[in-house]
Image 1 (cartoon, rainbow over the protein chains, first blue to last red):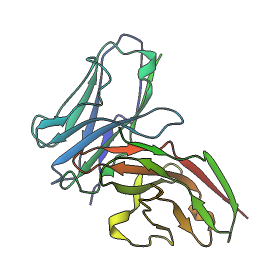
Image 2: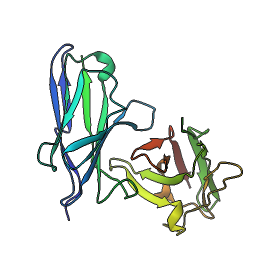
Image 3: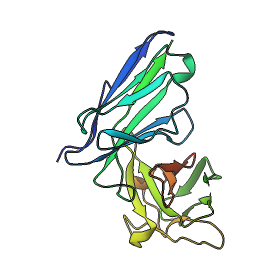
Length: 114
Length: 109
């Protein structure tokens, strides 16, 4: 079946602009995660959804970052007033159940802030 | 706080040689450990998890709580094993994975 998909695959924006990154999880997966991977680093946790609610947003770096999952399926990560330091690959993962379910990752969105 | 350490950024071995990718973790509770792999131009995918105690593509990993390690091993490396390998820790009550910085395995002829 279809895996986790993310759009766009690449996003280039200018400092100060607003961006939205989309994640389509595997159908039926109730848990959804966002991670950020900077160059030379492993993925770092941002936020976790169980259904429609954010169960753990302790990894969001500051209030410029926000994520929603209004219908318990697709999720959007929103970044306001982007900064050059936000440049990274943003990964989405989903799992059938949480917290012990295997997380399946999407291909990522590479965000470049000029 | 939990932490995962992968001391080697790059490990280069010859085809047919044994492979050991090191992973150490720091966590006071009962950990669950994973190895994820990323082949060139592919997404991150699960290789194995310690609770399954299975061998995938010839790789095995044993959790050693005394040494807080979860090293990944394979007796005979193949060219197709060349990839980026990440060790990750899922804590007992949390929902998030904590990843190491990764080790690039390069298998040469």
